[in-house]
Image (cartoon, rainbow, N blue to C red; front, side, top):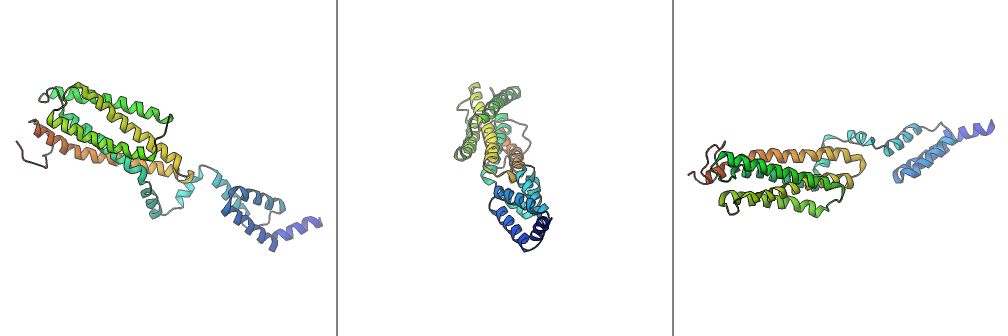
Length: 260
């Protein structure tokens, strides 16, 4: 009994404070070491102030679901800064989606054999999108096989922008004008799917667990904004291409050059 009382007195007195301070220092430096320190504290006595909160903090740090709790502690400005810091991933996602959707809705809708016939344009648009979806399926399925480095992740959106220029020139000059254009359509899908799967895979690999879920959700806004931007710009692309090919039916007026 005397020994037990001595232990309680030491735990509730100066020795208890010093022991708590040592536990707190362990928490800042190494979570594993802190686990051991708090276990020793609990065995020494249950009278330490703040002991329960310290143990709970350990559990939260080791629990993957604690990421939501961590994000909840951030202010609006801190969350905004965290979102903006994801630009190495969001810029490629935005760019590749903006380019490929502007390409599909803006240029493919103005290609047909012959271009003057609406049924021919609709047919190429349908087949082109089928080939695009096949390319997306293939590239997204390869996400479990390899992960692209950041250099490749940024290169692919640039290549997609080149595809946009390529199909715009095709629609205006007809320098390559037959159904073999379906192969470049397949290539467009490969790039789009590859940026998508590798962008999110790299976020999952590169970022710490406590912000990973928030980062994945935030990055998903980038491709959505890219699609919205493409839907707007594709109207003007289609209008200019319709005018270049002498086709009626554009929703908006081409903002450059003079009409025929």
